[in-house]
View 1: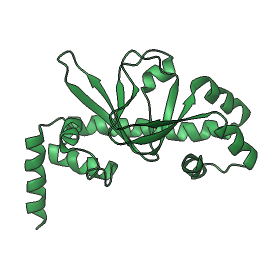
View 2: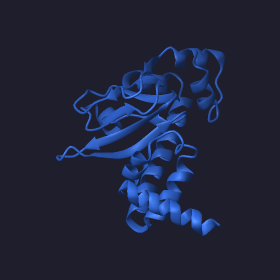
View 3: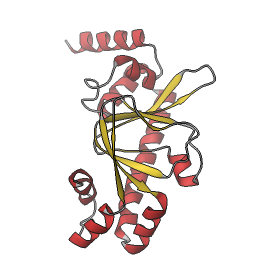
View 4: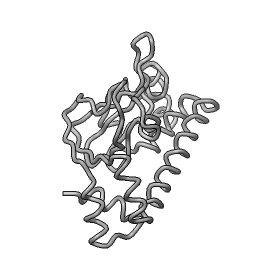
Length: 194
């Protein structure tokens, strides 16, 4: 039942059978429908989530009602409103399912106790958090100094094979361009490759 997340963890740290049991005992499994919310703005955020299957997006909605996608999460990715999770506050983001999804949630207090009981989990989550921070920094820097074509190529590298799973308008939103601009960029890249 927890095979996906255990494989994911054991890519970083080895686990004994008792450590696996201790870890999986704190996981909460959620099955979500396409377009179902995992988190909505204003929710208390008690969990961070591992995506076992499916694809989700995290976004904010501005004062004009426009969505601004900040993250996609597919299999083997982690997602939450991390600011709200770590500060034990209310969500400022929405997270919903692009596809039917299965996630495993870990409550913050259970995670803290796990770190005390099995310190190597602290190392695992530190590595994951560091990786997420680096990815976020790269995304910010990319938006500041790269062309839209370069940002699109970065998207393809960061999210391989995701283009076939999500609508083009969501990719354009993530890149901060109009869908028509994304179509032009793709066309130029294809012409440049031939």
